[in-house]
Length: 97
Image 1 (cartoon, rainbow, N blue to C red):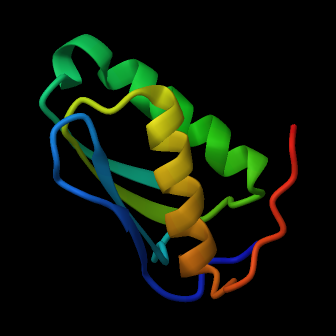
Image 2: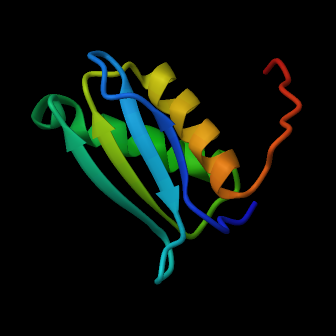
């Protein structure tokens, strides 16, 4: 999958996360993290984002994260939605894993 525009998912509500995925001018995954729990969980949040981007086969993107204490599953869901939007995919065939 390739990022071709900016995609956004999530809210700034408590226990949620707003994620923006956009094109990266250089190579790799660039994570810009702003979190109310960054000191405690920053490493874990970055790990979840990197693993999900690998799973989605994205190698170059900028991921801006504004976290309000979201769980890992919420971060994954928001990241996946924002990434599909950034790749211009409108219809996703969801499967059970």
